[in-house]
Length: 451
Ligand code: PNW
Image (cartoon, rainbow, N blue to C red; front, side, top):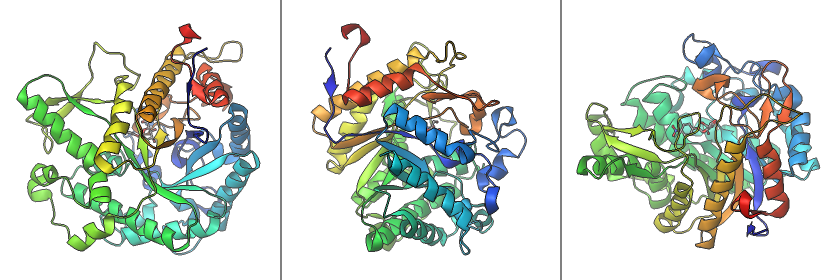
């Protein structure tokens, strides 16, 4: 069988986030998050689903860690709910909340699974939101204080840290489009939130340099932007969207400047930022985490400020049940673009995966050939970029479990493992078995037919 081999020390993992899987968001003294509030506003989430129970991982983490071991995972990326550890977001520590993450970390290490901890996957403590949240210039310091607490508690056992998950999604879907918590639609707020998130990352990295002994990075969502037609308007729209999505956070972090396009896009809503801030933001980050799902096919749309561009779903192309085009080549292109533009930084694919309408279990297994195909083609795409010299250290499938897919609730399922929302029963999908073989062989066969 022809298999494409991955580097010897390549890390094979799967990813989740706290609010999406844990359930019991107020248990043991935890403070509510903006997500807890948001889901309890009627009409915000499909079917008014909530994360109140989610995958009940808060109680079932030992079973879930056993599942990970069964799949042969070498690493697991999870996030910490800030409000479990600091119910008010700052100040008094809730030891029971911290203990949950200590027990989870130890359970992983006992099975030889390396933890990668994301400090912020969107669940800001509501108490901090009431003080302005990410709009408050003190927010980077709040975040760094919280980060320092976790470094002190867990860095002796945790080799990989991610400060923020997808600051673009936090800023744009949370503060401009309003689809995610806190549900604002204000383009004066958006660039300020983005700036404070970049400063928060920088402050946390600075705190890590003082005491941390391992590696810390940032996870960003990236997608190549292609014009939907050869018209100059569509081409210009795709270029704007590239600056807006792919370069907004990475240019200041790695090159020390915001893309100049942003100022013209936001016009009067773009604040001037101090040079000292930009100096602070351009900080040594040990790796970039890449969350890759699809590409953007972009059409000019004059009535859609600030971008005047929209992403369309090509009806002729294969799509997932999120309506996202399946476009593996875009992963190779994204990884090579990172190498060329930013000088070959160390990379992890911190998320990659797909939602499909899976069937019910049959003979103890869930058949999901489309997800197997998605994973196979994207792993081949990652391999192609490795052969062209990128420094890719690991791959994390999104997601280990079917979970709470934000505004889509439980309707969209990304898991390698099916979770029945009523019985909480976990059932392996074919894709989980496929991934176990990839991990076992440290490589991927390009097509089942050649096997
Ligand atoms: C990521 N976009 O979100 C998140 O990190 C996960 O929590 C989430 O479950 C997963 O992708 C699947 O949606 C994204 O519009 C949400 O470009 C939206 C976009 C990208 C990523």
